[in-house]
Image 1 (tube, rainbow, N blue to C red):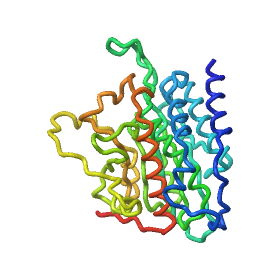
Image 2: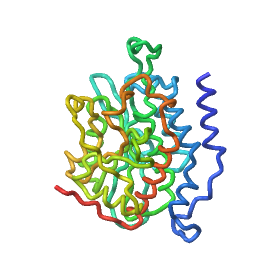
Image 3: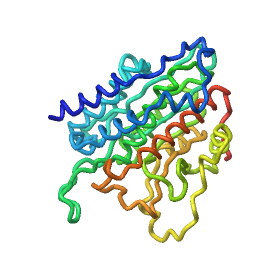
Image 4: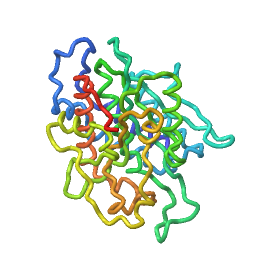
Length: 331
């Protein structure tokens, strides 16, 4: 049954009609504006990605479970279908040791270019979640941490952005990285940042996308940026979009709520590279009672708002790359 479910969702990807892609050397065919981005990125695709990754058959995307292969294959098939290159040999998978005798993979793709500059930016999102609980959660007969918001929503953004940006050639190369080990002390992010440093990959900035499936209260189509004060990225994205896309978090009495703030995957890149590294999110620990809960499923996702955020983020990043904007650290 699960096989038929997944196959049916994959049909959506293959049967949906898109505008024809631009030749990388000829951008005269279309005007790349925000309306064009909205035409190229369909809401049904965003909905299908999140619904698939958070389906019961994916068993909560626990990287220690054999069912995680469904998640990896789903992401890889999307990258293959959209002709996005590998970075490492002929595979998207970057295997690393998580714990004794337990291996996992980052999934790494490359949007290359024909221009001489050899600078990179990273767009990333974690694909793993908590798996299946040992017992039912409270009075709910549900043991699966579906992770629709955490972080199928971020993966949907990364996949949609990769598909769109792969049409173009920029001065910077773009690494598309689906990270593993978020719920194991950001191990995948740390491993990839360390790998990139040792491989002399000249990273200029990192944008991590995590938990964008809910609307900020009173701020439709807006996001927070964690550690925004440490770079000019929020300013440049807002300027590119000509709006306050990234807004300030309200100051509140935090008490012990700091303890449940997630440690974001941009942090290892900052620690190792000392480059602009930030996370885009709509998560607010004061208002999101479903974080790390079995109730984090598609019934609690605002798909229209999520898709609008993906459209805006895609266009903003496109503008930064097309105009070769320098993202600067403020430290």
